[in-house]
Length: 289
Image 1 (spheres, rainbow, N blue to C red):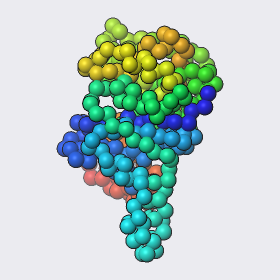
Image 2 (cartoon, helix red, strand yellow):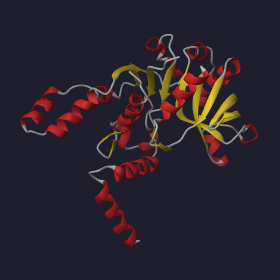
Image 3 (cartoon, rainbow, N blue to C red):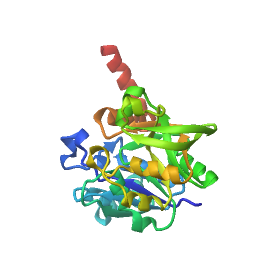
Image 4 (tube, one colour):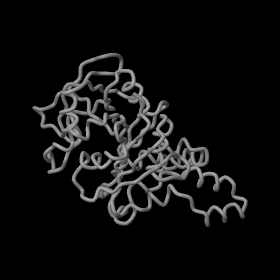
């Protein structure tokens, strides 16, 4: 079992980030010096992913343009001797083999994943949600791939969340397998309190078998009238083995203003250009409070 392909669902309307996302894809909003989605692609590449499919919609052609060559700009940078800027522009275009498909109707995450069937073929594949940026020593999707390859099964990335927050995520029924890895026997989307299995919720990272596509094709709409990937996972874990990885790392939900700002500040503090300045700036601001 070798995971070489990844799917990034990025077709959402970005309603939690309006009005900025009215005309700019939320995935293209800048975090320090590059768009949010580039962090996700870099995570996938660092984990050994070779081919990436981004599921978009009709309003997100900016992503296609960004991960392409721009000869006019590159010539201008080269003529001006701006070698560092030129290298960064070219690096974005050369990160991976990136493909695109449109989700023509907004029918949920499960429906978006189903659009990847032809791209995936008969291989296992990774899924990295476009809103979730991870900060970890070992790429989070790489942690899942290691578990999936070890146990020859699907894997989901989980962490514990507060009980009152589970209604925004899902709840996973788990049994310990080894340190930070569990066997999954059930999962429920946006549970009511009486439906909660545990405080472990799936947070934005998956390794799935090609068999998930047959499952998704048979699903009826679930919560919100949408095809829910979680409902597909519930069926899948009852048919075959699935593991949950309590991944090491910090997850940021950049689909909302607070999460986006938290991620931007943390990454800016670590950036060699902005870090020293930002630390001084924040100290001065704290003194003023």
